[in-house]
Length: 535
Ligand code: NAP
Image 1 (cartoon, rainbow, N blue to C red):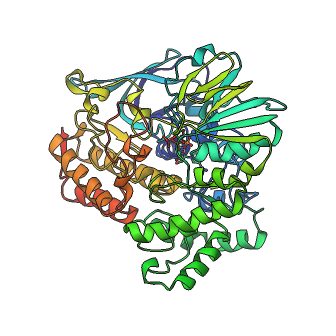
Image 2: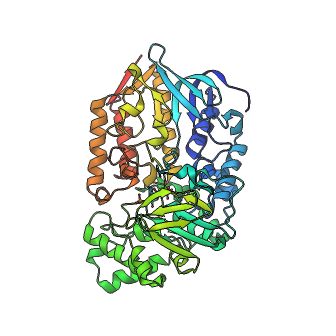
Image 3: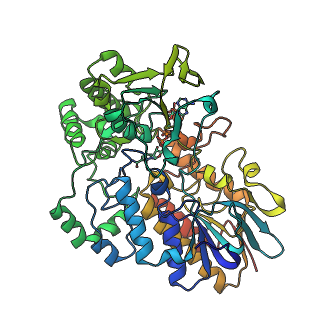
């Protein structure tokens, strides 16, 4: 759709990633007047933007896919266990075409303001390219990892080579052939990109502030028998996923690692390390995320793996994380640590020697200047809340969402924000979002939001809001759930700790999707307890 869009819609969807596409599909199927604004030039959201070399999903593709349409899940075939970005983008395009979604998606249309009109109970939305619409309801499906974090390195603009952030990767690709490359950042994106970049760069300097725990993804082409097994029993498997804490299927847990004889636990960890997903190791024991001693056993097992792979013992120690495993997002990789055995790769510890500035020729740390032709920033995101605050959202009494959230992204049930009526967040702060299988989570939340909208229609309610009191109660549930785990002890993007000035508050509900969905339903069934409904 190219022409500028104006007019009134019952529901505007923001974002054509997997959450937004599903919301749009459901609304269109019901005949609801709707439109979707997408900042990118195509569908896929995260999987449209993050096209850096090596980008790959870390949940098996048989699971990380839509469940809502049996024909879709039967007809689609994934080439690998863990699909690479191009295949996931291809899938997103297939879904958009199959369900005719493009008719109602406005591409290259980044929403740049949203204002609630209290008299009329409608949202006014504008986009950067000039669309101006009103909507009774807004579903924001803007993703948890959308707002790019470019740290304020002094001198970045002076760099004479090209620089790229992993989440804004040029569609035409980037050649590293024979170039001196610098990568800043060793989270999931850096860990995936570094082995690929090292293959063709003349030299790669990796600037690491905090090492990451990363598991081998042991990726393989999808075995046709395995695919058949899944497809023959998709209905039961999807149901099993829906009742799982993280909306995923993992092998059964082994019990408490602390109760095991050393030889037994070592054997289990070795097995899981070599299994089809390294994540199996992270979820295998019921005490590793809640008990520091248990966690340390797993963490040390992983450190020993690093020591066994990396030949230079000094480099190996620098690559060993010292925080509790799992409290920062664990990565899945393909040959990450072995990359440091290459002659053309150097690890620069910027915790020891911080980056002082970017110069026209490269990166200067406290140790000296590293000359580079090209620079890659794998420096992450203003996660979870950043994609919403960047939309310039104004609620009742002219309240700016950035002001509302200046001390923390308060919300009710991870979907509602007091003073911002008729706005539904998919994967918002306070929801299980990034710590559950995100496509399945989006399907659940979209269904919930549509049920609420239908109910409001029946009750002839014009406006749904919540209160600060109930936001505080929900935040207490979110923080209590986190307090039973080790998450709180580490600075991570889950807490907003990666962004200077962002309030540190744990933003993900870790009490399990089963509990989360039950709580959301309970509050509606209790005659909308915690909500303010206005006729
Ligand atoms: P990230 O996990 O936040 O990692 C950013 C990296 O940049 C960290 O190593 C961070 O160090 C470093 N950094 C940030 N600012 C810096 C500075 N000023 N100086 C030096 N280093 C700096 O971001 P990401 O790797 O893009 O991953 C974000 C999330 O996206 C992941 O956790 C995951 O949920 C998702 N993701 C998933 C996949 C997948 O499914 N396979 C792939 C990529 C991303 P500190 O740790 O010290 O802050």
